[in-house]
Length: 578
Image: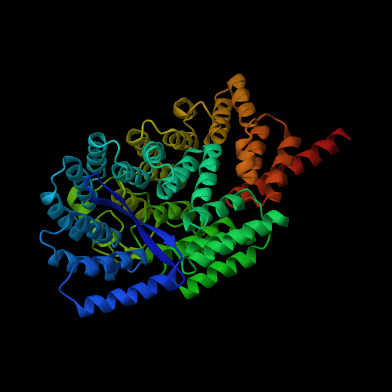
């Protein structure tokens, strides 16, 4: 943590005065805080038996991101308070969770629950305990119960929202964030969370409105500025006066958190979208050299290399992120995307059926809890008899074992089995589990429909995609509707229903939201739709537009090959006419 960067723990208070939630948000006021830290530290050394100033010290350490020191001070406060404050116990439990010490956190929460007199508070604490024990569904039910008992308490809604974010249910998360904002319209944590959820469900119009509001409320907030810079880069506002404004925003992000990977990732993509790919590589390569044990830095570096077509180097960087932190779902999903396109192939052995419960626990203890992640056992045969290098097979199996309550890992695993191992029936079955976990989520149905189409099960694909389409809200254009319309058009075309195929492909060409939010991907999907409609000339123009906007790999490779092929066909057709 740089001395120019601090983290403040934002807490929400229960109706009886108990602080229920703590969230880390970047801030920048080091000089004043460091002076206060020195004063409080000297005071508690001089008067070690008191707890009030020690509590101030613990809170300040939390705000400054010095979590381990804060935990120790909170423990000291609890030892000195008679009886101990529930609020302090909850704060300690939350920090222990942030540190990954779930067993200790659960013990602290249980002590707090025994002292709680309010049923809503007990339900909220029960939710926190359930999360520490890995029972997400029980956690959701407990937070929902707390919110129903105290609907005007934003703490319950915010806890529920963050659990839904963790399991990938952006629709449910959005509802909970909106409940917080209805109570506290300027809550910056809920505003940022709501923006992320709106982007995740594809409602970019409302997302931009939410981001603009957050910018008015907190113009210097790290999270707000990071999302603003990301949006501007995605919109390709990287040249001229707009480019200067984008770079200024990125500079602010870097100034607020110079030791975080986020700003460096933004700067790298800024260079990439300006046609300066080598400069972007240098930015992230330099960050990983300065922070070799920073998993997010390696993750960002791996994603960047993947997006520039450097698949082999991307795999190496992402595996380093996995080695450093084998507990992150997005690292697993990234590896499932990168490893299949590396050469030579990662593995030819398909993942095995789910393990028995005891085997899963044994596997988790070695892989999901900090084992030797680059030398993990493949989950088949004699488990633990020998260790082999990590493969696509082992990644898929670990991912399913570690994150069984996240719908996206099931569709991801299903796609890997279908595309990389030709395990058609099992791949489709795994993918369907995602829709069972989130039956009201359009994205789950769209992802499953895509897996079915890749498996050449186009009748079932049409049904799944149509189900997802029916779940889309009617009041706004959603980004996911563009790709879903293309997939529907293509599957109907394979089935021989030309009328339905044309209807969906024409619908895909009509979206304006995607063109404004991500012009490169808009060009890609428009080109693909036009190609399905037989308009080769316009398809090539749309593809060229996408390429000129710095379309990322792997889409870029697909488009470059398509343009080359289509140009060849047009030249051949011209010669035959002559």
